[in-house]
Image 1: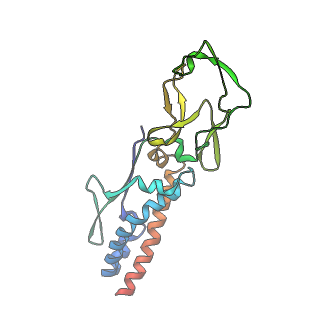
Image 2: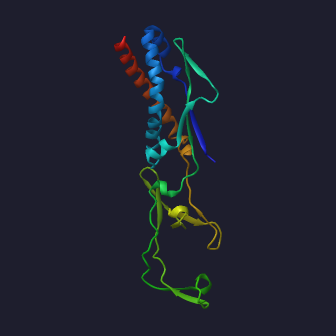
Length: 226
């Protein structure tokens, strides 16, 4: 669920672009070609800025999950006689564990409770055998929490931390009435962040403004080169 999200960006939608490029001739053609190259490197940063306004995730993680490619449907734009392939930004990835959202505690707790307690002996693994009841000094109670949305730390009830594959400390919850099975807690994927109604419109707005600003820059530079 929510494994992929993509944006199909068409450069020819920029306001007044067609007319300006035709008017400027060779300088306009040069500016558009530079704009397309520029977009491929800058657009992921525009997207990351919009996402991190809402979600407490590092921009580096967003950049790792994106591919910039020619539109899968092969569509293209014609601008002032120049044919330019439309570009897709494709974000993919599964739901993320709390380690991506400032999980606390980040390490397996070792602090012990101030008093011992009795537990059923069958819950103790021992080569020497344990009676019907055992005395243990358990780990002191702790609260698992994470910051998924920027500026808001959430408490995760009925959760505990332990080492997963590769020794990574993850937050877990039991999925039944017994001690097992357990599952790592996951909350949201990067594609789901991208398509959040609070994020997606901002992404398009940043892309439009970013492209318009870069177009002005490249038109100015191209005219200097003439």
